Image 1 (spheres, helix red, strand yellow):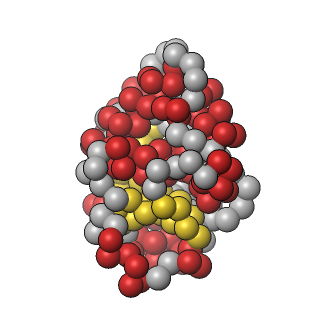
Image 2: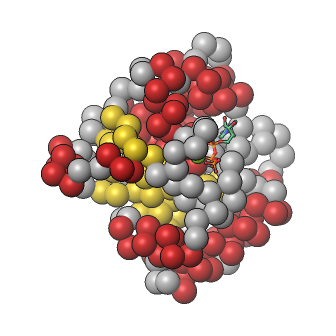
Length: 201
Ligand SMILES: Nc1ncnc2c1ncn2[C@@H]1O[C@H](COP(=O)(O)OP(=O)(O)OP(=O)(O)O)[C@@H](O)[C@H]1O
Ligand SMILES: [Mg+2]
């Protein structure tokens, strides 16, 4: 079983959105994912799942994890709290096979992401860390430029850019996956997620 932890230095960058949708993409690809919510506040993936009870995979709180029951899952996705304490981050990097760090493309967000990656580098976890650029504005080249800059600095950055679509917000409100939100942009939003999933496993 592969363990993928989603973490970030800043809050609100799209961790829960990615966690829910990557679990959805894994399920659509024939895997049996388990999404573990290690956050528990408003907006977290567990609350998302409870809204309509319509997500096609299991979502549980961190306190409900029973090691014995994990063997039937292929993929464990951990949705974590933003701004983790260094101690928690160290533990997370030890538990996970892959640390996925979503980041917006503004200068402030990129600085926060670089800071987090510096810490993970010192911890020897850089090898299993990947940045994914999210909430990418529909116009301009800011995300392509950021991806290039981060790569030049030696970081591993996913090719896929997860673009900003209002449909992601509607999916969260309805407690469903974005592919089930009415509107023509929903398919584009879902295709960003599927491309990202293909890159990751
Ligand atoms: N690709 C996207 N396009 C449009 N809106 C997005 C996208 N990703 C996330 N959002 C929106 O941004 C807000 C924050 O997203 P989300 O809750 O996933 O972030 P988070 O990193 O889990 O936040 P927190 O640190 O509070 O746990 C939500 O309103 C969500 O709908
Ligand atoms: Mg969250």
